[in-house]
Length: 425
Ligand SMILES: Cc1cc2nc3c(=O)[nH]c(=O)nc-3n(C[C@H](O)[C@H](O)[C@H](O)COP(=O)(O)OP(=O)(O)OC[C@H]3O[C@@H](n4cnc5c(N)ncnc54)[C@H](O)[C@@H]3O)c2cc1C
Figure (tube, rainbow, N blue to C red):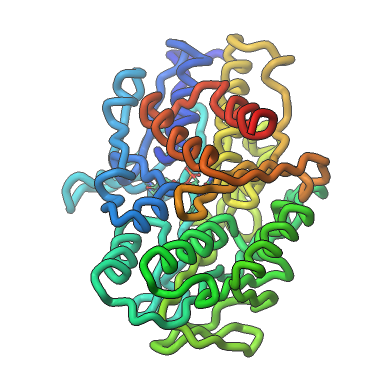
């Protein structure tokens, strides 16, 4: 396709998926494209390491916000701090409102290529009682609430529940190999449970037997595959953790506990929960999304009906569970695809399809972590789990590498972790 000037690639969202995609597009396409990123905040929120900061009594606002404007500027990428309000896929226009000062008017920006990397809306406001009685660790504001409760003498030594709301995954356009998940991402409740159990012991507040892990589905973290889940849950049981499955959903949080949609309830002082990951409301009726509002793509992350629209990260229907490492894989694919369109990358290199695998490193407290690499849930055969101090060091090192490379972890970043963990440790 011929463009009168350079094609304009517009990336919506500047967190893990958006930042990485924009930077890889620049790498693949050089000066053949104009690039713009829109996000409502000018920094990346490094979500995966927030629990580590909280249990070490460090303020995650100081350590988990990575400014992105200068990184983008150095790559010749324009950044607009704005709230995206609407996408018109027929006219190729995006509506936004600048966020720097209140009162800004609605404006439009045209794209030739659109990358939707807006993540999801973490629907805590749909959990009755969350505002008064709930705790969570998916952003620094709520993380500090828990940190102050634990370290400020608020905790009275009562029971603790940790788990997820029901996730609503779309089915339209879903490939057969992608199972339906009942929770959006259950690595976090598992790692929070393990590290909080260690924290209780270290602070003379009891231990894992104060904690009940719960899941809306038949098995917690089932996307890690049977073998790994059996091992992890068996280990947690021996340590004293309690476990409740098939809760269906969270009905409400109260001062004294938690009630589930299946009619059961648990007494709890601390209710630490992860919500439903919902698409942003303006996404819901677009012709590019499934019945829930997640963007439908093929395995090259293109929307089949609007092939110049891509989706990466949590906003994409193919991203299940909602895991940052899946967004990273997709970011590389999108950059190669646009590079192919512009004649910079061969079809052979670009058309390698998305092959998901659950890869994550979770904190376990006491400077230990677990590492999971599994594609069993998607029909593959890889199933690796390792635990120990070195994995914790790698988890910290990954964050350092991420900051140092400005959200463009080198190609060997994940494979190197894999090599170290799976073959040397
Ligand atoms: C506690 C916890 C621990 C986790 N640990 C891991 C882990 O160890 N490994 C892992 O791989 N994953 C982990 N995850 C999941 C990971 O955080 C997400 O998968 C990842 O953040 C998704 O990246 P994203 O860029 O797609 O979306 P997001 O991170 O949600 O970013 C979306 C961006 O879009 C912006 N945005 C949204 N709407 C608008 C709008 N209307 N206008 C303008 N801007 C907008 C937001 O400001 C944000 O910057 C964890 C999640 C949690 C909650």
